[in-house]
Length: 76
Image 1 (cartoon, rainbow, N blue to C red):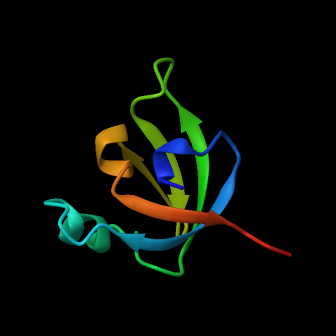
Image 2 (cartoon, rainbow, N blue to C red):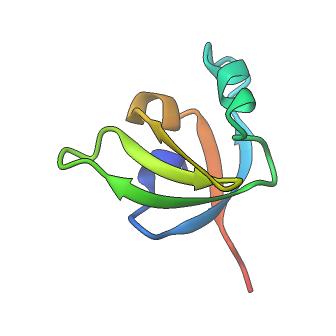
Protein backbone atom coordinates (compact mmCIF):
# COMPACT_ATOMS: atom_id res chain seq x y z
CA UNK A 1 0.00 0.00 0.00
CA UNK A 2 1.18 3.55 -0.67
CA UNK A 3 1.38 6.32 1.93
CA UNK A 4 -1.14 8.45 0.02
CA UNK A 5 -3.76 5.70 0.53
CA UNK A 6 -3.92 5.76 4.35
CA UNK A 7 -6.67 7.48 6.31
CA UNK A 8 -6.62 10.14 9.00
CA UNK A 9 -5.15 8.85 12.30
CA UNK A 10 -3.77 5.68 10.67
CA UNK A 11 -0.31 4.58 11.84
CA UNK A 12 1.89 2.70 9.39
CA UNK A 13 5.50 1.62 8.99
CA UNK A 14 7.54 2.60 5.95
CA UNK A 15 8.67 -0.41 3.94
CA UNK A 16 10.45 1.32 1.05
CA UNK A 17 10.75 4.40 -1.13
CA UNK A 18 10.65 3.94 -4.91
CA UNK A 19 14.23 3.74 -6.11
CA UNK A 20 13.46 5.73 -9.26
CA UNK A 21 11.65 8.58 -7.51
CA UNK A 22 13.25 11.93 -8.30
CA UNK A 23 12.33 13.06 -4.77
CA UNK A 24 13.84 10.00 -3.01
CA UNK A 25 16.78 11.88 -1.47
CA UNK A 26 14.48 14.65 -0.18
CA UNK A 27 12.11 12.10 1.37
CA UNK A 28 15.05 10.44 3.12
CA UNK A 29 16.25 13.84 4.39
CA UNK A 30 12.77 14.45 5.86
CA UNK A 31 12.90 11.12 7.72
CA UNK A 32 10.80 8.93 5.42
CA UNK A 33 13.12 5.94 5.63
CA UNK A 34 12.31 2.22 5.88
CA UNK A 35 11.35 1.12 9.39
CA UNK A 36 10.04 4.50 10.54
CA UNK A 37 6.52 4.83 11.92
CA UNK A 38 4.27 7.44 10.29
CA UNK A 39 0.88 8.78 11.40
CA UNK A 40 -1.54 10.70 9.20
CA UNK A 41 -2.46 13.75 11.32
CA UNK A 42 -4.12 16.30 9.00
CA UNK A 43 -5.81 16.30 5.61
CA UNK A 44 -6.66 19.33 3.52
CA UNK A 45 -10.26 19.50 2.27
CA UNK A 46 -9.19 18.07 -1.11
CA UNK A 47 -6.87 15.51 0.60
CA UNK A 48 -3.87 17.08 -1.10
CA UNK A 49 -1.55 17.83 0.64
CA UNK A 50 -1.69 15.59 3.70
CA UNK A 51 0.32 16.12 6.91
CA UNK A 52 2.16 13.17 8.46
CA UNK A 53 3.86 12.92 11.84
CA UNK A 54 7.26 11.26 11.71
CA UNK A 55 10.01 11.39 14.34
CA UNK A 56 8.18 14.11 16.29
CA UNK A 57 7.85 16.41 13.25
CA UNK A 58 4.84 17.10 11.06
CA UNK A 59 5.57 17.06 7.34
CA UNK A 60 3.05 17.84 4.57
CA UNK A 61 3.39 15.87 1.34
CA UNK A 62 1.57 16.12 -1.95
CA UNK A 63 -0.18 12.94 -3.02
CA UNK A 64 2.15 12.56 -6.00
CA UNK A 65 5.13 12.47 -3.61
CA UNK A 66 3.50 10.26 -0.96
CA UNK A 67 2.72 7.77 -3.74
CA UNK A 68 6.45 6.90 -3.87
CA UNK A 69 6.41 5.54 -0.28
CA UNK A 70 5.37 1.91 0.32
CA UNK A 71 3.89 1.31 3.80
CA UNK A 72 2.25 -1.41 5.90
CA UNK A 73 -0.04 -1.25 8.91
CA UNK A 74 1.46 -2.11 12.29
CA UNK A 75 0.81 -5.64 13.44
CA UNK A 76 0.37 -6.30 17.16
